[in-house]
Length: 283
Image (spheres, rainbow, N blue to C red):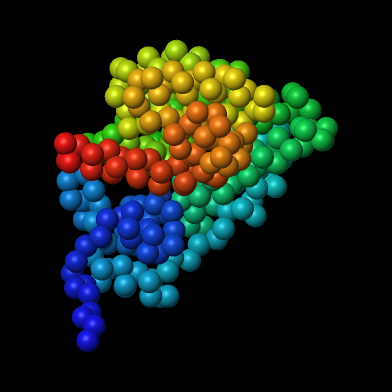
């Protein structure tokens, strides 16, 4: 005879996210907004099984408007350099129930991809692309404080764009998602030399170093950076639109692939942190 599980038993937020079929950051947002009950046990969120089952109920499922439909309007405001108009679109999405994570990954990121695609096919000029990027950076900065999380940090992560890579917004989006998940983040910005990645890894003793690359043709620079970081003994993770799979990441000397978006990165970093903690307990 089967025995029903003890509903008072708790699982980690990573396990809860897996049970719900969502990314870790989505589950964390449920906790932050009070939709999923959880308790902080040391540095780890724990969720009771009965609370998890209650959350599965359709009446508990949050209803919100998807921000993706606003991307075309946001593209127009970015290209026009209209920060006020662009911010109004973001505020409307937030009022509709979207989280800052949703804004970053389901609104800003798709809008920037549309700008990049327009530039590649000649519909968007170089000047327009630069104006859009500058406006997007200001929007990211305005959203940044919403990812701030008080209290003791879960660990430190180093994030930067590889030497020759001038697109720093993807790395900035990842950095904010990690801050929202409770990590301290050291941002190195665009065009970061391999030596700077290695020096920062030695100084900060991070959980991992994340290297962003969106521009094709920078394989040599990426390998230089991954070699330099791995020599310090710190795990190195490569990601960005120029790295399309785990196989490509491994060919560049990376220990792990960052995945397809910042949600994947946060889940990966949490796994690396837990693996590191397990190794320390076993030694």
